[in-house]
Length: 224
Image (cartoon, rainbow, N blue to C red; front, side):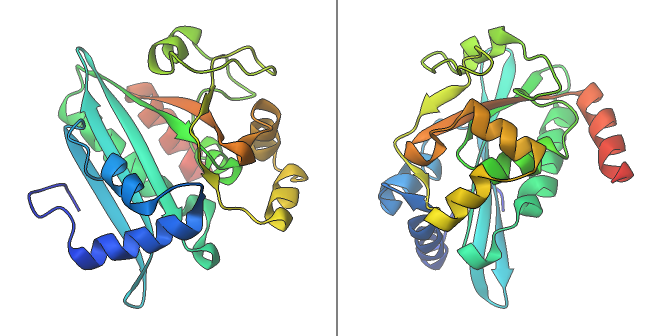
């Protein structure tokens, strides 16, 4: 679904509101919709709804905002608890990001946004060739200064990759314990960088969208 004058129907807004309510703590669902779905700032939005039978069980929203000589891509995604699976949104997100870049390859494109969930970070980091911060890659500090100017440095890597967002994923205590004790390298790294992810602190992630990314991510994905 691409943003238009008929952006969201009443039933779609209601379905999204219910998903947002159970997915995030300390937020008002209508305020969230106004900020992420209705703001006039992005030049374009793309939304995928995920269904089980006729029920909306999740969504992935991408926004594309042009600056002087680059495009910034941001994302919001959430699912009802029983339908959460880290790889749900990867193919949609990466495909639409590359499509935007291919339409204007002379412009630099960056995904530059917060990730509240260690599981979401893992879903992206394990499938994407170049992602910052990452335990196996050196991150360009200039990009974090540019895109996250009011952020905080992580004690782990001294990179400005943390930001207070005043909301958190609505994890149970059992889920939090599972994440903190996970043996998955990407989840371990996320928790080391951002140990307070359940207290309204998010990890700021930057992903370049370019030819190198396209080639290396395609190879990485096909080799799995």
